[in-house]
Image (tube, rainbow, N blue to C red):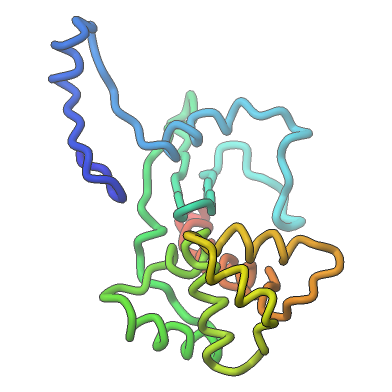
Length: 193
């Protein structure tokens, strides 16, 4: 197995032999996380809509972070089985004129515009820069100064976005959340059937 975002080669048979294990099963992080979902207590689950849950239905797990991880679970008649998915690497599907402009803007800079380039920690500076370059909002001098000193602008943008007195119009989470809802559609669609 080779990592998607890191160039590590990990081999089950080599690990099993090296450590003298009886068996080895490699899981990606979201597959491991999905395995735990059926064990969550009811108070730890937040429905996305008012539709009653199907007790044997499929379950989507979507985890925006540094990247956009996805996994899903299917019921086999006895228990849920976790399956990894790489939906974060699938094509970003713009759903509005402004999102089409964002996609075009990112295509000029990257060979592939994935959901992850828009709907994750990687996407936050992409959206910020697009909105700034398009001239929709003005970047305050103090924010430009802070970002010029940052190795990674994401923490500064998120910090400003979550402040109650948010003074930077480019630091609004609404746009990222709107794009995330689009990225969730394929995962939710898979679970509907």
